[in-house]
Length: 259
Length: 317
Image 1 (cartoon, one colour):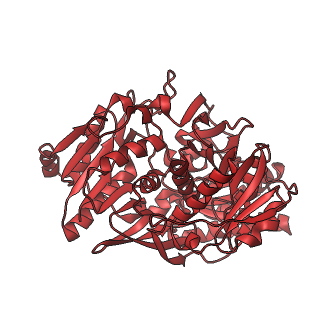
Image 2 (cartoon, rainbow over the protein chains, first blue to last red):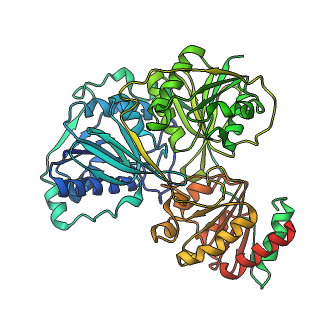
Image 3 (tube, chains in turn red, purple):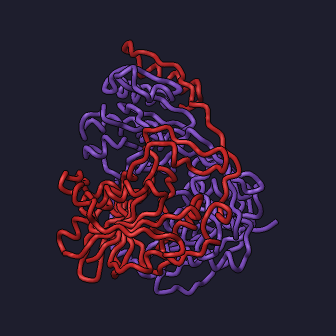
């Protein structure tokens, strides 16, 4: 089974994240960056399926030049090869535009499954797999906490608000995973060394047949008009339990008309 | 005024509270039309009319419940085409966002998710980076498609005509590609859903074990609250994953959020920072959760929480 794993480089959640004053897009340059955490689970799941049933795992990422660090990490975990879509014209693309660009690249790849993380820690929209399903006409199996890949079919447990749905489809199919699904491996030293020799294809938008008029900030169908740093929530009162802590809390709740 | 389509989140015709909130918001933007899809849709008509729906578009085609997301997006796309609405509002939960995504592609429109406020000119307010930055954004292309978080506004009744208009749609093979073969309910008991709840009581690492969640659940039941958990607690297997609040879990903004034994790491804050009132109980006076709590109590949750449960019970008589 051939698998494409989508990975995204994001600002480290622990770092101070900000928007750029000039164009109101995410500042990806002046901040520590990491592989989006749930994408590690997507890579892990792809590797497990490959180890069970053969085939190869291709990493696909769209992002600036430095996103190659994130791609190398996926390769060092054990993915076989990678495609990096990078072009200044892509900067500022919103999710809908990004799905168009990624779908163009996917159309040039042979795969049975695409696996992505369910959410990126920067935008937190959780929609890329659904967008790609709409663009490719292939089934979306999203929010998976378990994936069972069979011959020509794939079945998942989709996390719901009160349990899960079992959803199945024929391949090729697009899967997104939640972090309950597995425990990602750490890259081994051998893996890190091997990653340096693995094939990495770099594509510009022209290479991928992407129409420049449909990507980038200027033509983005959603636009940020303004933003403001929110003053941190000011801490309220903090009291030490003197044996009547529960009573104190209820008194506070009553003063706020919450009980 | 132009129609504003509101996708109603419902179970067998009983709308969830977020649907009434969206109708309330929609009244400020145009003429609200409810769209109710799936089994039991027509049963929702009177209920959504009470919150201002002038029209209620219903479709009960079996494909809507048998396949994931795609068929619902198709019905909405056909309604967008036939009614040229000013906007489409959907609940900002997992399914609502995915329907919105597919609808945006189908209609060539822009999409905004996770709005917590909307102005009359359809500027959306979104908290980002765990609530540390607030963004105003607008859709520049096509029909504005906006998902709105639960508890963004207080639902208020205002009767609308509620004229039911059944709609039909033709579903493509792509719409039907993902088949739902089984729905499994793991949460028994009558607690409100985390996404919708006005009060959430969450437990974290300090709860210490699965059994420790008993005191959290008892407080939740005394308050009529939903139960949440930090990632530390769900990763440890102490509480089901679907209750995880935070980055990679659920995002909630209830009237009251009580965090017990939760340190308040950024990952957790990202999921609850927009709660109206936050109460924290933690043994560690240095826990970062106290930086955002309106009321913080430094103490052992296993003595404080049961006492709190008793006191709430007394107040409620």
